[in-house]
Image (cartoon, rainbow, N blue to C red; front, side, top):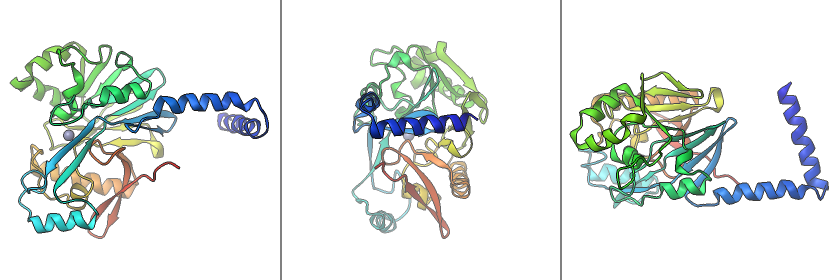
Length: 309
Ligand SMILES: [Zn+2]
């Protein structure tokens, strides 16, 4: 019944827009919405009925030296793979784009970027503002894992909470690992009052479930946002590079803490993504990081979403 009503309303609005000067109101509203997100650092899209935004934070330039990604492989094999995909072979570019989702009154942020560290641009706060959200409006932050390009934006340069009203959510195992890391002591102290850790693989808040993806760090977690065919899977650092990680998931990556487990997790996710046609969000894949995995013989390829027309 609700669907029928919605369709009827939409048809009425379309009819009005087509033939009535009153359509100015609709046009004005559309223009206002567009102005909020008219930034090359923001990509607006939908997850079912939820409004979502890819927020560019910056990019990491990783040397193509077979010591970081594709460890121990030959330069010839690596370069052949990159060249076949139309990519340069001097450096490997990894984008960083935290994800913002509005679900009713909830304003959800997935990872917080590098805050200008690691040679990145530190664009997240500007991108957030361009998406029409102020930092104190964020209600929940979901951390995939404790690396600097994901937790760097949790606090300001002065050490204060960058999102003062947000509950910070991460897996029990990852929170334990953070607390055990002496280099993160100041950050842990700052965020402790806001942290609510969860059991890996559990439903966390309405519309968001943890996807337990082991290996990269002790408690690395992806997230499933929404339900059914409309859902989006945020896979964190299960994969870093849209060609190397997808087409050669068995190639070792320096950033993986437990390489064998990370490799198995990567392959399992690729198989599931291809067989279930999962809609995916790659925080390090080319902006805006949206796409799907297609099986290609014995391996896989990344198929980015077609750009909106
Ligand atoms: Zn990362």
